Image 1 (cartoon, rainbow, N blue to C red):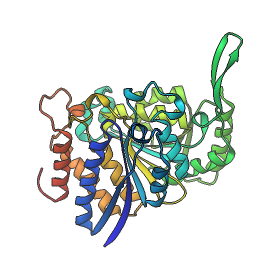
Image 2 (image 1 turned 90 degrees about the horizontal axis):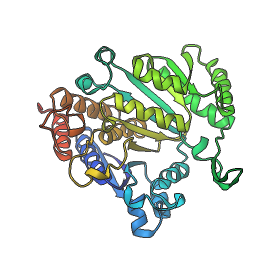
Image 3 (image 1 turned 180 degrees about the vertical axis):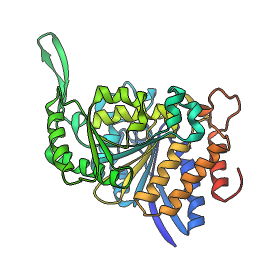
Image 4 (image 1 turned 180 degrees about the horizontal axis):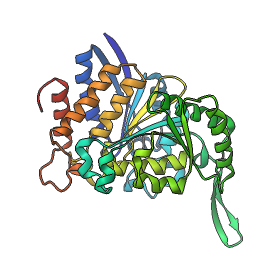
Length: 362
């Protein structure tokens, strides 16, 4: 029996609840496919600040680097909002990505047929459906550039610097093209080349790399137009590749048109197979500890882990199919209930997914 070591970063808010759901599903699918998992929890975010005064302890970094893969819940909450930026819970996310060399973030945004009524777009747009893979550069750009405060012409001012190198752009663009070759063979590059020098370099390199993929259709789109097109006709997109900040914003927009941000998983990868898998939503402190959170995004993140980290495609497909069957059967959590007064708790939705995995009718 294959055994995989998984580091668990439960984090804050609803993080512990949704990670527990994913663990239960992984254990169930592992029994079915003859694989086992060793789960080791590590502190991150606000929970780490409370325990040891810092958002990303060295023990957490070392534990993640020693794991075969890492599953993350969520970090942050109002309890820590007053802290300086360098020790806020969110700082841990940038730190663990850098420590693990995770330069690629894959964020699928798919409208499940069963959730078309929960889609906020016009009925004729939702009826077309969409299945988008957003490839976001994760360790460069404005989030990692020089920043600070200084005295300016009009008093105190703050600054953040956007910076990208050829190497950083080339490697993320290649990921996008390789991803597109396994899908519908279209890549749309999102930038702001009419204003930003970093975007002009991005667009130049994108077209250079595109020449090596003549079988893939390409398009350039300015980020403001992309934001509009995502709600006008999301079905036009296959693979989107973009910078760190643009990818952060657009993937959250894409999540909302799927019916709920609670549906979207993500994978953060390096050159190897080890990566970090997490739902794209936040810690939702308003419902933390109430068994109300939608666990599907975290469960689907675990499915992505099985596929990308462990090459366990059959087990990954089983989880995706189980989620689809549960949704088709009409089961919902509060965020995707679309006005219905009867919906499942976090643990009940997890039970249904595991029931579907076992082959039982849900």
